[in-house]
Image (cartoon, rainbow, N blue to C red; front, side, top):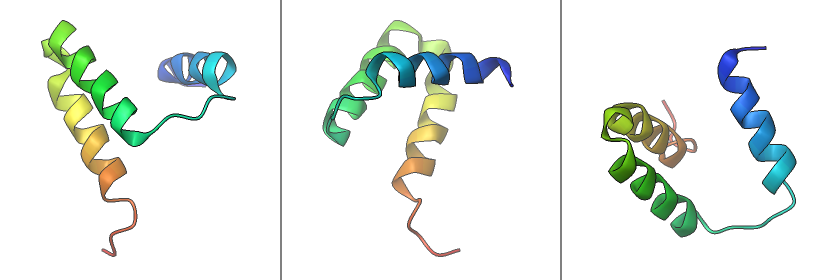
Length: 57
C-alpha cells in the first residue's frame, strides 16, 4: 500500500456511501488549493486526468 492509499481508504470508508456531484468535488478542490497553494499543480493534474478519462489517446 502506498502512503497516499491511506487517505484514499479513509475517504472511501468515511464517505463511500455518499453521492456528490462533480461540481461539489470541483468546489472542494478549489477550496483545498486556496488553503494549500503548494498543492495546486498536483490537484490540477488530478482534475485534468479525471476530466479526460473518456478521451481516446
